Length: 178
Image (cartoon, rainbow, N blue to C red; front, top):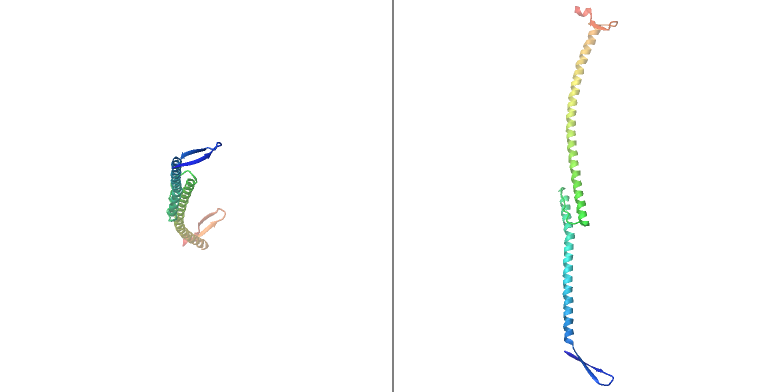
């Protein structure tokens, strides 16, 4: 397509200038296609970057969520894998320290429970042993009491004499005659 333009000069002569518009139109079409293509590439790159970043953020959070669900179900030896060096990775590290502390506390509670059960069992055994000792001591005291009562009875009935000056105990003469 050729456009023509008439230009007047000072001499009142008409000058005709012509130019080809098709070259400009082709360049404009190429530029528009280039910008559309660049826009599509930019949008595709942004979508890819967003999906990658989203997966990078949600994967550790999903992993922590699964670990937390396992802990809430009573499985306390859970260890989440740290896959990043950012705040999410720091969160995973703190989570793992928390679960390790929970495991330590449960181990301590189990140890203390066993100690208390052993102490309780030993206490019952010690009470039984002490009761037997007390029964034996009571029997010994009872026998010694009988011996002492017999001795006192014998002393009162004259079988024994106590010599205060020499501090000796001996059978009385009346005892020998009986």
